[in-house]
Image (cartoon, rainbow, N blue to C red):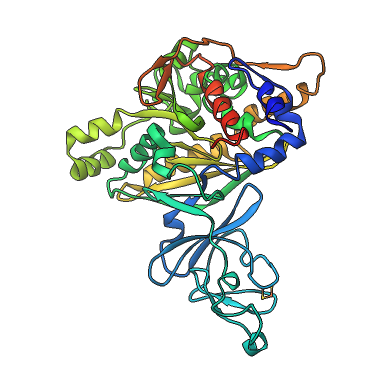
Length: 434
Ligand code: FES
Ligand SMILES: [Fe+2]
C-alpha cells in the first residue's frame, strides 16, 4: 500500500474502517509499528537472579529477556543460532549457567554467547562456529529499562526510551513510588484473554470515558443494586464492590477525570480523581509509606489517581491498583490481552490481595467487567464489515484540547482526544517517519 493511500485512511477526526479489518494493513502495522516502536518485554523482577529468563513475543517475533552471570540484562531473539529452533518456551524459567538447545545440544550463555557445540572440530576451517558473531543468539537492536519496566525495539534507530515515553513515564513513576520499598515485583503468572477483534480497539477503549456507564451497566449497576438491597444503603462497601461500583459513575464524574495525551500515541485518563480514588485506606500501608517517604511526599504520591495509562501500542498500566495489561496482536481480528499483577515491595499483603481481586474481577478471562468490553469490540469488528458506511468517528470536542506544552495535551474526559492522539502516532509510524 503506498503512502498516499495510507494517508487517506486517517483524517484528524475520522478513520477508515479498513484500518481495523484489512489483513494487508495489519501486516504493515507489524512491520512499521510493532517493528519500530518500543514494545514492552517484561519487568526486571522476572529475571531478578542470574540464569533466569522470560520469553515472550514482540509482534510475531519470539524474544527472551535474560539475566547473565554478571547481572547483565539482555533481550535476545528466542532462536537457536544453529538451525533456528526456538530455545525456550514462552513464560518464565531458569537455565542456570547455560541455555541448551533441545535439538542438537548447542549451549549458549545467558548473554547469548555460544559456549559449546558437540564435536565442535567439525566446524574447523568453515566460516561458522565458536567465536563467530552469527553463531551467538542475536540481541534485539535496542533494549532499555525504565524503573524496572523493560522495553525493546526491533529498529536500530529512533528516540531513546525515556524520550519516547515522554510525559507518560510519570505514570510508571507513580506506580513504583507507591511501594514503600521503592520497587515492584511481578507476582504469579499472567491471565491470558483472547479477543476476536483488532488490537487497536483495546488500546482505544482504555481511555474512552464515554463507554463505562453504558457497556458496564449490566455488571456494575447490577452489583450496586444487589449490594444496596442486601447490605442496606448506609453499609460500607466490601472491597469487591468498591472495585466494581465506580464503573457506572455518572458522565460528569468521568468528564472530570480528564484526559492527557503525549507524543507517540501515549496517554492517560484521571489524575486528581478516577475510579480508583475511593478505595478504603489500609492503615499499615499508610504507616509504611510515611516511614519511607515522610507525610508530605506520601500525600503527593497518593494525590495521583490515574485510571489507565497507555504506552502505545503494547503496554497499559493502572498505577493505583498495580496491574498491567499487555497487548499481543495475532491477526487483524485476533488479539491476546495479558493481565499482570504487581506486589509493592514493603507493603502489607492486603495491597496485593486487592490487586489480585481487581484482576480477577475486571481483567481475567472469567471476570465480570472485561467481557462487556470484549463484546463491544467483537460487535465493532463485525459491524465494520458493513459497506456503504466507511468511516469511524472521533470528532467529539475536536480542537478543544488544551496545549500544556512539551507535547502534553489535555481535554475533558468525554473528549475523543485519546483516539485522535493514537491515530496521529499510527499515521506517523505507518508513513515510515518514526
Ligand atoms: S537447532 Fe539448536 S542446536 Fe541445532
Ligand atoms: Fe470498559
